[in-house]
Image 1 (cartoon, rainbow over the protein chains, first blue to last red):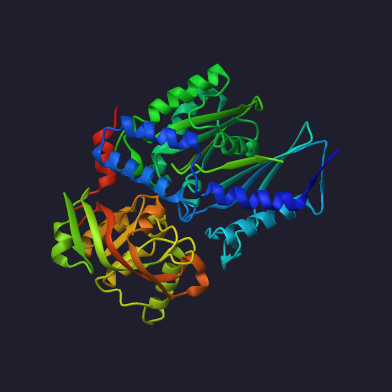
Image 2: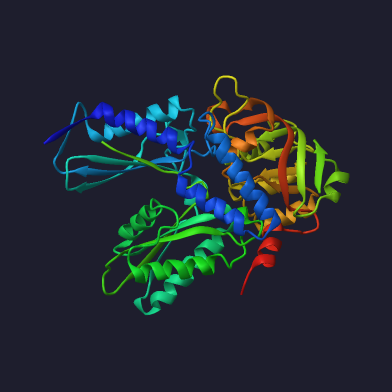
Length: 281
Length: 183
């Protein structure tokens, strides 16, 4: 049984959110540069230049990529042979969010009583935490600041199995089309297919953590990703919706078996500022 | 061709702006998100004055990240304008002339833009570090309890925006998409 100190978890969560909000992952930067190269719209090129320049400025560590530094989504993979000491796990994560958002000059966007008074919690807690128990004795922490603009464009449908593959394609392309300029394109399209309602939503969210442009290891799914990306980039929405070829940087699909009566599909979009950062303790 | 425009916007200037125009704004703009909009509309309904004289002014839909020591403002990019759609026509009727944000407006707002001769601009979303460079002064003037959603008065210099909706019914989002769509 390996021991992991709660303090170390707090420090790590704090650091990960601060880094995620200032430094775009290398794969996202590369995808944006590639988009800039193949963009045909002059205004689209200007937008992509602006986005890349923004990433350079932010990488100085003094000013976040986007003022919306998100709600603090945390994915934990806890090894079954690890033992957390010196405090409880979720309190340690929340303390890390509190510390990171305060010390890092990140925006506090969480409000309590969301349907009425909407009172800011002032430290961006509570974090949205998901935990998986996995083999091993380490703790993997993924920090994902999730902005509200792209999140609001989420779509879910329970397709009839008869609608099949084509139904999935039409729904996902429709969701990106409907989101248009609101989700800050070029977007990363996270898609969940299968499972139950909440399972498919989680699959869509987790799909956003994959390296941008890395295809699904399953060839049938990878082919579906390729086909949807092609359709999406024919929509013409383009960078920031001003028109162009690059509406999405990638389509990532995660699949899980479903009930024989169901074909759930969820679409969770991520803006071009596809931020996340991870560490293993 | 970039158009350099001094604020506040005049009727003459608004007539010259067309969807797709590249514009640099200099002068004073006010900042308000949906929380502040809700309060402003409630204030108007009570017959009380708004926190600033809205006639001829421009509102930027934005909630900045906190400024560090020595910074005028933190990251300062636009928020999704659609959340202001239910409030904007009333403010346009009060004399608001410019709106800055990102994302599509409702047909009601687009009609109000024509009716009241106003303009809707967009800033590159998700590029708040870049946007902050052209903000020279920032002060909270109302609703401080809303935190990042407070009303601010900004002074901007050559602040880069793009005309989305003009008084002639032009809509860059629709026009751009039509131009690049492949059926």
